[in-house]
Image (tube, rainbow over all chains, first blue to last red; front, side, top):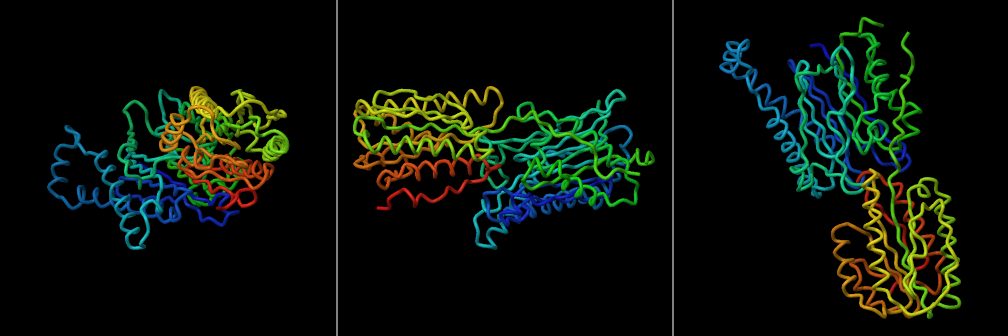
Length: 276
Length: 219
């Protein structure tokens, strides 16, 4: 399946004013049939959270790529078995376990960095959103705030739905980072279900979340997502989508309503590109 | 030709997060004269300062408990609508009862916010006294410490004149501040600036409060 991807992270206006670096980070990897999306938001209270967010994304993606290639490429027996049974028996693969281990690995890499820099683990505190897309299936793990929203085709209609909503702590200015000793209790998972076909997916941090997710119901606001998805769909193949995503984040309508760091990754099916 | 930007809308259904602050003010007989006059002026400064900050005036909610006789002088009101009255002095110092009421008010308010889906900042209780309690206070001191440890509330105390600073020190893990003279205006300006910082803070931002140098004595 042919996915197109647009992504950008932009320093918040309040961070520009306070000379604080952008503490959001995103990374994407296309790998065989897989699209892997990592987004992390370094906490404002942690001094090296920009580094933490960077390590979380890179380590999470590295781990998943390694594991998937081990299973699928370097194990010829597995491939032969899979080929044999492809049509009759679906080969089970435990994505939940893979994602859990990926977060654990990212956490360990952060702790290693803390050790090397003689810093405390919590200095690197960040949230994490890790999504694997394969064909029109998806699997994700989520720690902290930020959200994942999907556009699905259901009964010939496109619907916008929150796949994983923000997990805010007790107070408006708190959430649980992956560096927390209690992170395991805050791991949340989601995956595709058979009846709805994934057309597009939005992964973003809290700077965007406050503009398009209802805090109480966690419902996604389609007046935000539908026009943006449509806008991306109309770009021809030669357009730099990351550049367009950055323009979108830097637009007055977003900047005037959010002074926080902004990260948005939009991944969508290419099937409507000919419309332009 | 593709348009420059998509015509998307912003979800405006989300309410602003709120920060509840209960002022617990000693208006017992010993505060009469200059202290109460300065305190009243300080309260006016607080309400004016908060109103100048657009975000803080929408997000901060103030309640006032006074003692001499314990009285809810002002139930929670948005800082935008907060008009302090001129407090008069009477009675003794039932601080324990006043603090119990403040803790209950905060808990009820938080429950109310939650029930309608309004996100909250950690509430504040701000005590100002010039005396020593004339009622039982050990139980409420234990409750304050416990609620502070559980991050239920941030507790601040300020001693004026001959306030029993040792006793104030036993109320909470945060040491009490000793007011320089009757610099209530400076103190309330600090409170306003602190509440403004809190109400501007975002996810997991530990708020660095401004220094208390202008009004608090260093021992």
